[in-house]
Amino acid sequence: MKTIFTFLLLTGLLIACNDKKNAPDVSAIKADVAVKRFDKDFFSLDTIGIEKSLSKLGTQYPPFYLSFYKI
Image 1 (cartoon, rainbow, N blue to C red):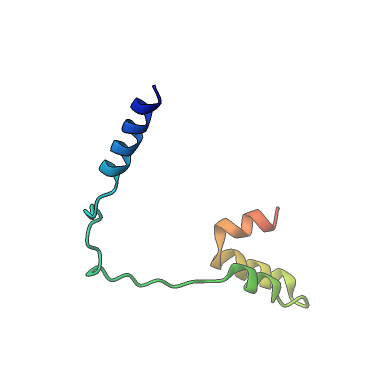
Image 2 (image 1 turned 135 degrees about the vertical axis):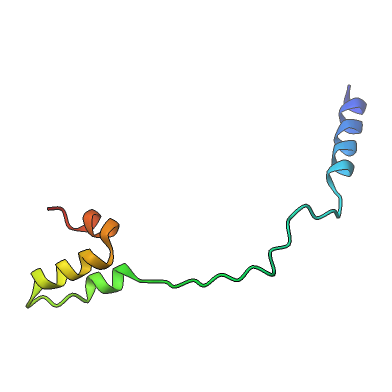
């Protein structure tokens, strides 16, 4: 029983270890990524005009705004 298990384990390891690359070549795809930081804008709000600042933040980040500022 041990020899069968050892044989199957070694066979599986040898079959699984190959140098074929099945990943597609994506080196020619260009992607423009712009990162906007909600946390920095949220914590740098003008507290003197908080209502105006919060409404501006709500137009810039609608999904995050609703999570942080419950109406």
